[in-house]
Image (cartoon, rainbow, N blue to C red; front, side, top):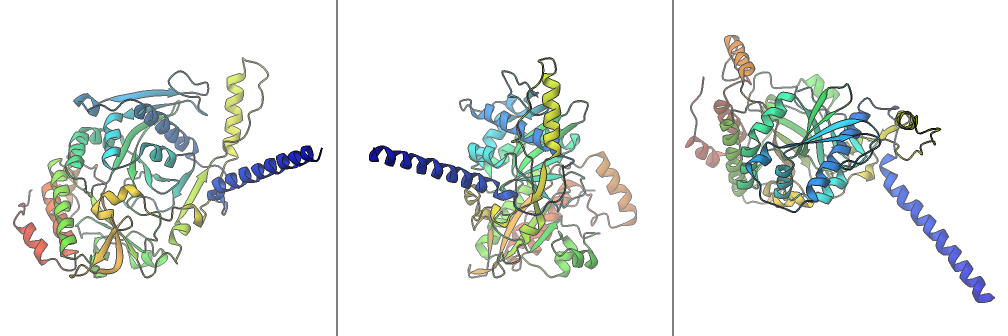
Length: 457
């Protein structure tokens, strides 16, 4: 009897330990939710949910197929998926009725592999938790974007025109990435479209986040090489010291990139190749995003914790049993809408972001120093800043609208200083500005002078 009693106690202890372990794991999963309430519901909840659901299903379907070489048709293909609450043989059941379109899935599968993105990591990152950026896009595109829960990926809405243009240049972009594994161009991982019932079609891309999850960014600059009107005021900077600054702010503050001989040659050479591609594709209005981390200051300012918020809908609520099959669909939808309404956006916990940079970034020489590029002196010795660099906003062609803008602004302003100029001139001006942004630059300027393009009217 004593042995039987002992076994019963042991079983009870195991069950109690299992319950505690389960509760601890649940608390760890929900740790990102700890923080201050920022409001009930969210205007873009349904859109975000549908975006992530579509990505998970479409990427999983493509990844499940055996690898094969790309063909020309892959660059123009588009796969449609229809989601509803009942589900079907192609798609699982979903909270909402919506349609999803996955563009060139095989091409983006290959791009993710070129950028060393593991498929399972990609899907894990894009879960039902969304970090909402309060900062918005540095540009004036009017798009909005969200970060994945680990701050690794950006989901950004784009216009129909940008979507069409991206599909047009996709093959050139893909070939450039293949030939330039260290490209500074923004990294695209997916192009999709979502459509709600009786709603408009929303196109969006999944991109890599240039800025790190594990480092505070003390200064951010968006540099185009154009100085006309390219500044934020001192008043704006005083009210928001973390605001994204522009070309004239960089010049007036006498900011310089400190890069030793080896690093500046590699940097300028890659930037030159990237700019040449953009000029060939008739693209302008892009910029170099620079995030500066002061190594001595480190993360003691807790900048990331004050500028990011997380959105996590409650998807655990049980649905009530429906009185009849006839009302089944309507009742489920009603219950799910009620659950959505009770969802709670909250502030992000400081412990929620990763403490290290992601391993895929180490394959690029510009992201090899803890996800960034370490500043160095002429002896290639470490300096005090860590740079996070990337060319962004590369989906603006020099079309009729930009040509008209160039003509009208050129009547009253310096036509070579305005933002809207011919892509070849834009590329040359961009490269000139970036080389002069380097502290010691005499040797790299000579390289550019030998390949200088004439102005194009």
